[in-house]
Length: 210
Length: 210
DNA sequence: AAAGAAATACCGCTTTTGGGGTATCATCTC
DNA sequence: GAGATGATACCCCAAAAGCGGTATTTCTTT
Image (cartoon, rainbow over all chains, first blue to last red; front, side, top):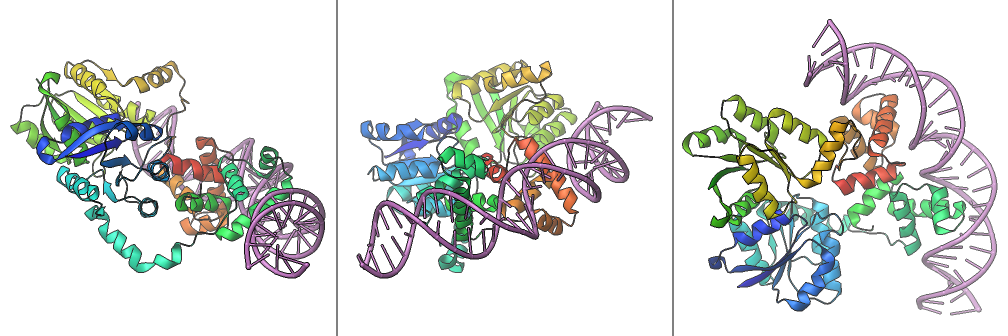
């Protein structure tokens, strides 16, 4: 019996999952939560074989949650569940250590297969995204994964930009001169090779920098 | 026993729903489909008390499907199920004759309550949107809903912005005047209530608009 | 037929950005 | 101790953004 912890911000979905599995399936939902921060305490008190986690969650997203769990030393296979077949999400999930990736429009049998395989530390990709993965790794593996190294200060600047602050406001927030902010911005734009701050934010969110 | 037909483009969700209900709940899922066009033939062969329908479906959306069913003379309460609390969607659903409106992040107990009430031709609104409804009918049309409604054109503009294009470049891409692009940008910024395009991109990615 | 969005286009104006250069100082690394 | 990196700060300037209007056309809904 594979013991599963469901992390999803839609209780209805989680409830559904939970009651969907029958004894014959060999899968049992032992716990569920809508809050990523609760996971460690659950793992400390409950025996769990696999975490089934939604990527699209509002407060702390699935990928960040996964990082949190793995960084705390918990060694569990994590199966990511999502609505979208977004390459950037898939990539981030894999980089951070997901064992599998399945779409919410999968069938029950596919989900059971995914849970069974990933619980045995085998990788699972939903058929719909398999081709996408192969294409990606055949095409531009070495080209695109270059992530320029940004300093902590630079990341702070980006976060402020994402909140809608202009150079002057950022200067006030960080207690530095507006000139300094402008210099940082210029350096960031060069490092990331983008033309506008809109593109900068898009790129940073894609690459998971902020 | 309330006999329910589920219309949802995510088989996993439908499966989950189906197996979630236990005999004690007084609810039974008698059929399910991912295609709105199949509904008439199902209704002709199966006894159904209530239709539980997802609004966000790709081919033919929930509201159009509901219209189709009601226009064909089938007289059944329809409970709409959705991810978003968009005022426009709620309004349209009610106008076209939905009996109730529930969010996908509801709990099982709430869903049971919703199904029970709507099957008796009583109206049901999910608590989360109740206040919104009241505000709306009180005249506060500018309710800050989860996602402001952007037109397709506006979304195109945002996508270009995210790619680093400036107004002139966007004008060329979309074959319109730079003035038009600027007007669109201004409208978008107001709708989304953001101060800079960097914040705009951040907000759009957060809310899943692009 | 009237009202309402949505897309289109234009004018003028101020502020901000993005890009160029330069420079100091502290820290970290080899 | 030399060299690299990061954070800080300043100058200039053209281009773009952002914000205020107004207005026409088309399409949908009432």
